[in-house]
Image (cartoon, rainbow, N blue to C red; front, top):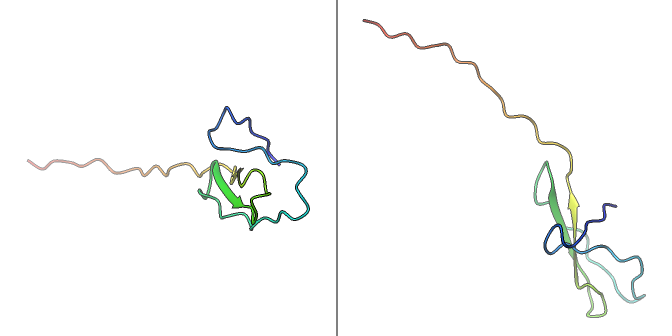
Length: 78
């Protein structure tokens, strides 16, 4: 688990270690990005769940480098 300081990234909650016994969570959403740093969210099923929504970092693998295509120079005919 990656712990993020809430002051570094807005609206990111640190996952609490203890939960009320009747608090259940929906599954984590898909990551917002396919590479780099994205976010995944989930919600609690009850007002007893604190926080009501959680956000975590996901997909921290690097994105592929942009391809560089080499073009032959264009020659102007005279």
